[in-house]
Amino acid sequence: MTDHLTAWDASEESVAGNGVAKRTIPGAGASLVRVVVPAGVSAERHSHAHEQFVQVISGSGFLETEQGRKPFSAGSVFHFPAGTWHAAAFETDTVLVETNFVS
Image 1 (cartoon, rainbow, N blue to C red):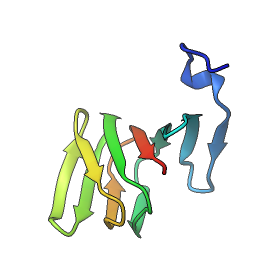
Image 2: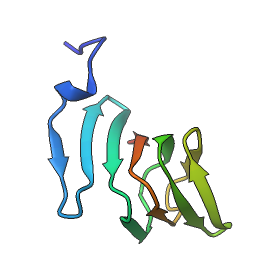
Image 3: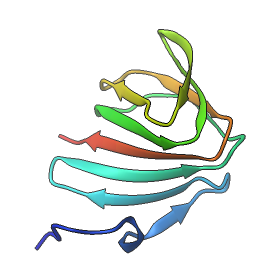
Image 4: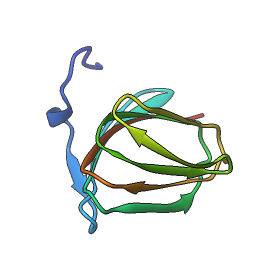
């Protein structure tokens, strides 16, 4: 049975070599991922086979897409249709929540 109420801390945390920490809450058609990114980290140009929304909870940096390079900060929302390339540079410690749609 799925918990109707949960906390991020209830999900196991994975930490990459660059210090990026992720916690995932899976669902049937989508997943939520809390991502904590240390200042100075960059995400190289990449894309996903699925649609993705990203909410910036705190922090700041720059997002690069085919539409150019734009600053982001708390309250920003990214939307990437499947196959859309994007890259990011994080100026400050940043917390994101990704919504990843799976088919």
